[in-house]
Every structure is written in C-alpha cells, then in structure tokens.
Image (cartoon, rainbow, N blue to C red; front, side, top):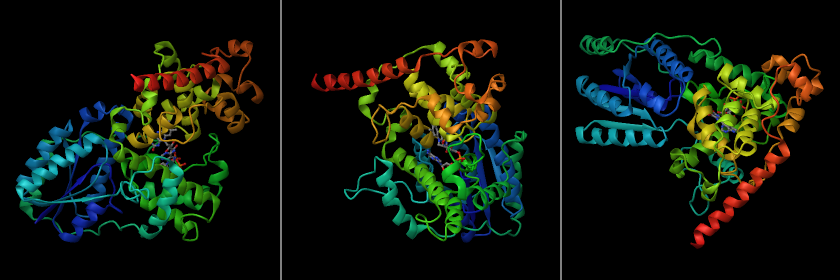
Length: 481
Ligand SMILES: Cc1cc2nc3c(=O)[nH]c(=O)nc-3n(C[C@H](O)[C@H](O)[C@H](O)COP(=O)(O)OP(=O)(O)OC[C@H]3O[C@@H](n4cnc5c(N)ncnc54)[C@H](O)[C@@H]3O)c2cc1C
C-alpha cells in the first residue's frame, strides 16, 4: 500500500505530522512537492524567495532519501496544473492514502478542497493535519464563539489552551527498507520526465534542516535572555531571524515554542522576560494566521476595518519610487529599504517604521507596500505581512486608532542612537557625526549626495490625520445614503 505525502510549506523531516502519520502506517512512503512558479509569481513572490524554495526542495529530497523516502519534485506551474499531475501520480503509483498539512490562504484552500473531493470519488484515503500554528485556526475563540479581533485577549485565551497542547515535537522518521523495484522504477520515470532545476545556494540563507536547528539552538542558548531589551535595536543581531525557516516550514512553530519553554523553566509565560517576549511574538504569528482564516477577505486585498476602504490614498509614482528605492531622505526609512533589498530580510522595528512612512507620511495605499515587501522578503508570508501592513496603516486588527503615526527621526534616535545601523546601510552618511546621521542638515545632505526629504514630517502627519478623519465622514455619509 503506497502512502503519498504531499509537501508544501512544511519542508522538513522532523515534527511533520503528515509525514509522521504516513510513516506510522506503512513502510511504502513516497513524497511529492510541486514547483509552481507561475502561481508563485501570481502571488507576487520575488525571484530570491522562489530560488530558495527550489533550494530547499532539493535539500529536502536528499534528507528524505537518507531515510529511504523518495521525494518527487514536479513542475506544476500553477495550482490547477499541479492538481492534474497529482491525480495522475496517485493513479500511476496506485496510491491508497495521501497525507498533507493544511495551508490557509484562499487559493491553497480551494486547491485542497478540490483534491479532497477527488480522493473521495476515487476511494483514496486523504488525511489532513495542522502544523502551521500550535493551535489550529478556529481553536481560539471568544466566549461567544467568535474570532478574536484584537491581539491581547487572543493571547490571554491562547496561553492556557497552548499549555495543555504543547507536547514534544515529533521525531524525524527513521530510515526505512528500500521500496519495491517496480515502484522505484515508476518513481524514477516520473523524475526523469521532470528534470530538476539546479540549486543556487544563497550564502545568507542556508536551507538545510540541521542548519535551522543549530540556528534555533544558538538563539535559545544565547540571545533569548536579552531579547526583550535588545529586540528593537536594528544594529544588534538580537532577534532570531528564524522567520525565513518558519515561512518555508524548515522549522515548525511547535519546535520553536517547545525550545523556548524548555529554556523558560517549562513555562509558556511568567518566566524569563526574554523568553516570555519571544513567545509573545510567536503568538502574534498565530494570531494573524487565525485572522486570515476567520476573515478570508484579508486574502483578497481588503482592509480589515471596512471604513478605511474609503481613505483617499495618493497615487504619486514618484514618491512610491523614492520609498521603494530607499531615497526618501529619511535615513532610517531608507536604511530599512536597503536592508530589505540587500538581504531579503528587514528588522521588525524597521518594518513598522517604513510601512507607516509609506501609508501615513506618503499616504500611499498600504497594498502597494505589502506587495513590495512580499516580492523582496525571503520570509514573505501572507498572514504576517498583511497583518503587519494593516497594523501599520491603521486599517487592521488593532485597538489603537489611526492617529498612531511614528516620527521616523525620533524612532531612529531611540533605536539607532549612534546611527550605527544607518551608517552600515547608507555608507554615504557614515562620515557624518553620529548626531547628524538621524537627520542630516541640508548642506550635509548635499555634501554626502543624500536626498532632501521627500515630505515634511508635520505636514505629512496632518495630511494623514485629515485623510483618515475624512474617510470616516465619507463612510458615515455612505451609510446614510
Ligand atoms: C509591515 C510588516 C510586514 C511584515 N511581514 C512579515 C512577513 O512577510 N513574514 C513574516 O514572517 N513576518 C512579517 N512581519 C513580522 C515581523 O516583522 C517578522 O516576523 C520578524 O521581523 C522576523 O524576524 P525574526 O525571525 O528575527 O523575529 P523574532 O523577533 O525572532 O520573532 C520570532 C518569530 O515570531 C514571528 N513574529 C515576530 N514578530 C511578528 C509579528 N509582528 N507578526 C507576526 N509574526 C511575528 C516570526 O515568525 C518570527 O520569526 C511583518 C511585520 C510588519 C510590521
């Protein structure tokens, strides 16, 4: 009896519920992963992330092969093409059971529903698992059995449930006996017909599962205890930088949470301040995933707060270009964008500052910034990216109203006091004294070939406040009509 494991954004051997289930059922386990470049491009992923997906799939193929499990990597181009191939594969290999871990975005869910229906028609057993959150979407609800719309009460409800659920991560499968020759031949034929793309290692983003575990352990054993105090300082490598591994599923949230709890005297909260704070960030990740499922409009470029749909965003191409090229004349914003373009990652504090700058100071639609981040980030993730952008633009799930507008200069004085991060990302400003790097004088800008500010802070702030206030008035008038 052949059991097929369908890999997607769960590209790991350890703590993989679908893989573990299949391995418990039978020795005859085959795995498949679809490269769907056209679909990924349609979802706005950039070339670096797509290459990293290829790299990871190829490395996983080797890691699974070491355990006696062949991983077929097939070109599906789009989701619907991958479904056709999957059905043909199931028929050809006489697959009796399929297991996979759920994905929660709208197109992915639609694809899975179609496949489950096909399995039912064929009499093929289909097993779905949850691995992207510790507590699956829908498991954390208000007393009225409604989804939480604000983080703090969500976290309060999440913690006791998680305490009961958090168990040790599942071990990776042990090596299995070789497959029957006939099955092996069929698998080789499929792979020959689907030549594999070459891996192009990215020195900043290694993709091996062992490397991910070492990175997690190094963080937990080192920077975790100082995380609360250091995490907002972009020049300090104080955060885990594990968002990439989490986004491809090289690590599971359970592995991260379990390690943090071990280091936190067995507690999810109330122990070491650094561990508490890091666990809280992982709960933010869960919160945004739960929201995505409860409010599917978030997958369709819609604002969480409906009344903000009538904000009159500006459509200045020139301003958007200056922001996206790191030429706004606000050093901390520009340094953030340069970090993103150079490394594929941006520090969380800078994501908030730069997102708020685009949506508030430049009053440009947050959806444009969301798409830009999605293209450049190696950790691009619809739930977290959408959540972060909507939070920054005050259109999202947040109790604080629209008048939270960061002053980028004050922010850089607080979090990059010596201008170290600015100097590292904008070398043209490195020769300036630390005190000038946050906000160079006009003559210093000219001397350093650094742009004059794209907009004046006080003016921009007022313009954003007016736009949000007017949008509320517009929304009310609309209702009366
Ligand atoms: C505008 C904006 C866009 C963002 N886009 C993404 C994105 O596409 N992908 C992504 O993974 N995160 C996104 N985030 C959240 C956060 O910035 C990153 O997860 C974090 O910077 C990753 O660095 P780290 O792994 O060192 O995080 P750590 O500080 O070490 O946190 C540990 C993990 O918790 C999760 N996490 C931390 N903060 C958040 C948060 N605010 N929301 C959700 N999850 C969080 C991440 O998985 C992270 O790896 C975005 C935030 C903002 C404000």
